[in-house]
Image (cartoon, rainbow, N blue to C red; front, side, top):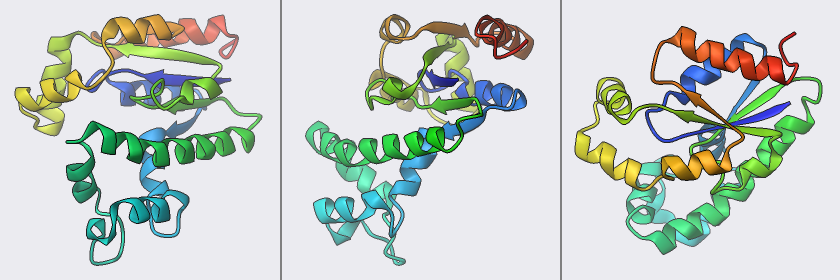
Length: 195
């Protein structure tokens, strides 16, 4: 089974991944895979350098993601061009992980699962929900983000209703780890992943 995990920033997707790891799932994090595809010698690297020039490279000729982000995230059309390079490369890597692990259950995590089309290669998508005040508290404590920065990031992500409409199931991760684990176990039992 391939489960897609998605949700906004601060909803606790990494907690869900840790629980699923305990159940033997192979974890594929789209963000990490995206960073790998941008490394020197990897498939997205040359296309990105060709598109954005050598000014985005650091002293080791690796892509400086901060410099690239400063260019792309301020201009929607430029971000779209960058995503058109990275998203297909990430999707191909995830497909390879799935195809090379046919006997294993896999979880694919991405905050932009639907936007990148990664949901198409998942058997089911779970939306991870958390109350807004819980999310803000987590992000302030774990990442030291200001409320303004948090609101800015959240404003660029899908709304709760959009996630819920697109996903097959919703896990409420606002409460205790035990409560979250119980919801996951019910879903896995339903799909006969846990017997």
